[in-house]
Image (cartoon, rainbow, N blue to C red; front, side, top):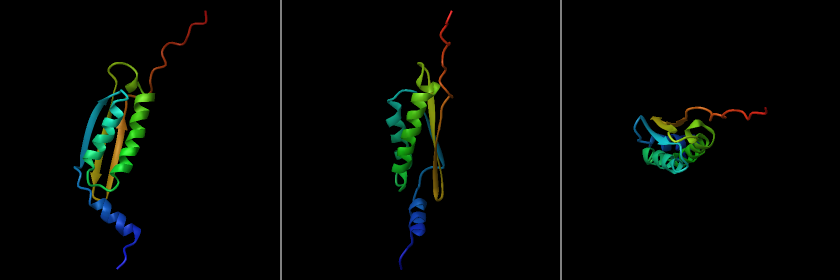
Length: 108
């Protein structure tokens, strides 16, 4: 019997045995980006899509550090969530919103 891609994908995703939800809060520094990636890979160990989700969290964490208030200032943080259920996994990155622009220059 030959299995189609849908069946193979279903088997592969169902094989994921990660906990239902885990999170980590990291400092808004560039060094936290690889930490976010490692966290996702560790939580999703055994999931066939773990590398894809680790790549996605790399982009999201980089954006949080580069463009949000998390990466601007001494105490900025962002949070990574990994949620799973049978046949799916989801990652989320939450940051404190846009970085402040500061005061506009005075043209007096």
